[in-house]
Image (cartoon, rainbow, N blue to C red; front, side):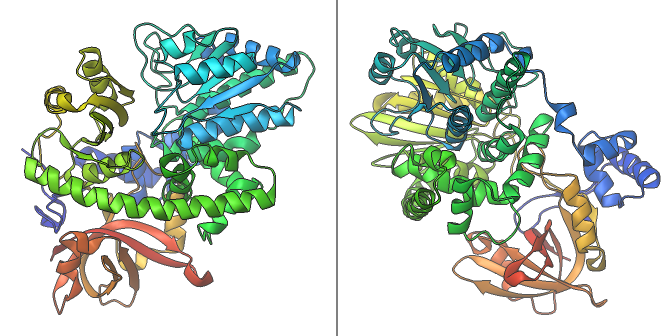
Length: 581
């Protein structure tokens, strides 16, 4: 027998069934509340994270020292660190070949900043998304090998057998996290937690975390020789940015990386990130939202539609005037990217709707769609449909696409498999995101086969996912102190969703903001009122339901946050769903 819907909401404004704590979660949360004195709604969050009462204190204050894995637990790590240090000691010429996204840019910046602190300047090379595509290519690697002794490929390279073989005369180190094949490229070292001969314990790391671990090992080897390496704790802002922007799950050491990285970022010591925060008009302490939606997209903008290396150069920049100019340029490119994205999104959604949104895969392909925005559009289709999505841009008979997946469905493995079956020219990635290149006349067959593989994993078996709620709150309980306690259980993001709370039978006043947003104020008639915001509410049914509430009362659900607008701190509900009471 299925559990009863929370507050009796079987179908909300967004078509979801509301689900509160189950019997076991409620029992464990009650016991935790009695043992710790924490609010029960917060205890539900902790129970759902697998935290036991005895481990609450350690979870609420994660220690990087305790959670940091031994770098040498990854294969080839010792070889990679020793070769890297040998190049430094021998004043050899080092090139860093990076992917053009945030993870690649942050990974490159980590190496460039570390080497600069040791008095060494390395060459940065990031391929053009349109002209060269993702990852190492033969001409670029041949050219770099002619002028360098060591090439370090970050956030790419695990599947680049031919390009790495073409790097004659130079050694190649790969520091990556993308899914590996049965055979590895002919590199000096391939450090990747997603190699097939790894145990998967660190599969959740992004590439910047892998780079960071190599630098930890490099510092350790330097220390054994009596040399002090650069301050790695001061570089965790870059690791945090990459972890959130690459949608790596915020569990285990990733949680500690982001938690500590946000503290470092708040000091505003990294010139490039400070300039970027200023152009993004960040007026409060950084959080995961700022990393994922304000800073990340701007760093990405250069790789999507501008100069591919602009984001990495900004993150590594040590000149304030240059950083300000690059940040302004990235901000302009991000605005341009949004306009391009909006046009592609509308066309892709219309095509996907015509094809049908009830299968295991949602996909669309179109001529002239900019390859720099297809990944973002795929993410929007995934969010709108609750299904894995692939969006492909076509040019000269070749499609370059990007996909985004849902929890529990490994898109990268499925795309890697159909590439091996010959339906794609190339393809790979990780569980939640992947890229592909396909001949135009093979798209229908490739997407049909991909849909089959995803269906076997359970994709497309239901409608909108249930909305999981931590519990019921009175408006008077939603205080700044309560939000501070909730934030201590964070940071929240992929693999660690922010807790959602319900407010029952609320009186609502509402007004439309701009074209699609909704601002509300609500209360239960007992005195306390809370403001709320629902972004994009009029792109779906939520805005029309609440715009003219009259005397009707509503159940409301969403995430609590502090709004620091205008220098005043106020509790705010990030409204996600509603139902008539």
